[in-house]
Length: 230
Image (cartoon, rainbow, N blue to C red; front, side, top):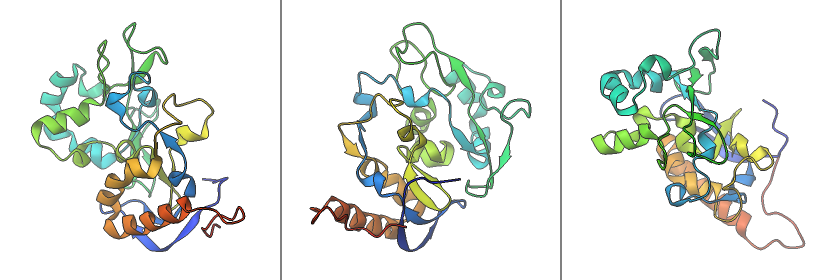
């Protein structure tokens, strides 16, 4: 995947604990781009970031199987309609950067009238009821004492940070003009994703990223950014 923005090399490579991505660079924009990170306190986005569904590593799809019957009742959606695995739709694709080496996407479903002023469709795992908010996989896990990382897609938990070709980068939505109504005032992308980055890649990566974040936030002398990019 082409990256139009420069990246900062890290001191070493950091493999994901679940397999998949190995991170050795970072796009410094994760330290400077900001958005309203207190998602469920937001009164204006209506979960717009969930409108297209999400990439799901195949191991997370399989991790839902033991909860299938209960989750079908919880969602009100049969398991056959959760993922776009049909070859005539998205299918299941090979990708070494995803844990398990393969991934698909979650299905989307039409939103009821009045659910969102921004979009008419959203991820099938979103609480799509009028006035509802948030991811039902996440809520399901919290209510049952399940580690949310075990069953929720990695890209969702890392959002608004993502990964590509060994680099931590801003999620794709930040490349699109006016795609996220929550972009702007708020916390840096890295601050929001920091705990989940630690879960997947360990405290040593977070320590190095913390130092880079501090350096990038330091006063610029003569307009020079104190990071080496490549």
